[in-house]
Image 1 (tube, helix red, strand yellow):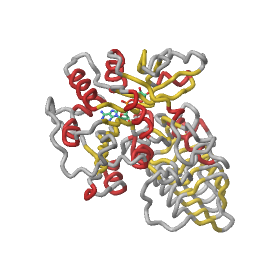
Image 2 (cartoon, rainbow, N blue to C red; image 1 turned 90 degrees about the vertical axis):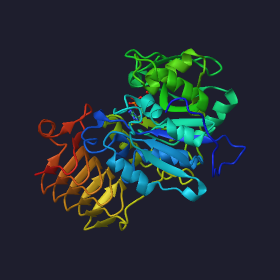
Image 3 (tube, helix red, strand yellow; image 1 turned 120 degrees about the vertical axis):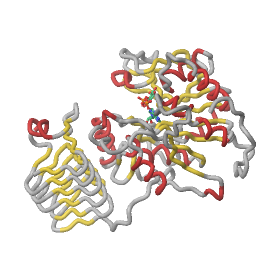
Image 4 (cartoon, protein in one colour; image 1 turned 30 degrees about the horizontal axis):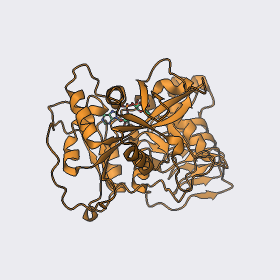
Length: 419
Ligand code: ADQ
């Protein structure tokens, strides 16, 4: 790492007229606010929507756009994430394609990454090896569909050093995000990372223009910015906190309005859908967005598929009067005489006779016993609710036993057992 120049690219299968793009996915986040779902796994490896993991959304977006050279920077509890990427996301090395998890390599000494910019700085050998024209740096924690090639196209046309994807969010939620002011030509005039009192857009006091944590860089601009940042002892080495404000000061930063992104097959309802599922309530709410008759987020858009690998399980089965309404049910699940409403049921889940599951997110392998009740709850993998037991019925009891989110959702960790 340091000032090495890019060498010639050998064996490249890149079409000459297209800009050569390397994708870097930041997947090292700890996800403390998703505890206990992150007790054993990195946030991007948290299961979502019955049979996906969060990282499947960003990787699907990049792969669907034709970006097939992708490095996923991991760090925290990365085992299940590494395994998921290696087994699910193999591309053809013969065609020069790869999606590779890159663990913290400690190239600059025996230390972990200090921030997301340090993660890239310590992995610059990947950039030197690939010699891209542009580098797409995307987060791994969001549920959305986006065609990143449209953002790259705008970045190239405008001649920006960095382009930041921006979205309008309610101002009440904006202190969790980088907040952006732009001029009439789309150049960023102010970027404040997670301000306690977020600014608002000129035409609406309740709305803030926020960074989605997705960036396109011209390679030389990113290299220069990372080297400058690394030499600054006062920096936190964070992409949103340090690198983007630095490039904004230099007049290099432009915005890409997510509202302009058009993904094939998007419906009126789910066009522009983007959720940061960084908290238990946001994670729960994003699941509920999947289950209504006309879902707010449509998993069934075949023109822009969300890709994953599913285990070899038989189809879901409903017997003995078992039913599920306004729900998605994963393969291998058996609803035997129980009732499921408004819920996301992962693969291999069993709901037994007389059980009631309502407004719940059951991750793969959960068992709900006879006559048990589960309401407004998230149950991590292999949790067991024994015969007649209840979750989400008595808030006081739940608070004593489990994690309960600010919005009142009971959350049980992996393998929990409710007697
Ligand atoms: P946050 O998500 O809070 O805000 P951060 O915690 O740095 O910022 O996470 C960004 C991405 O980097 C995530 O995908 C995370 O998994 C990953 N990451 C974090 N630390 C890492 C490390 N040490 N190594 C590898 N990967 C790491 C960011 C921006 C905001 C923006 C929001 C949008 O900083 O400006 O508004 O994303 O959600």
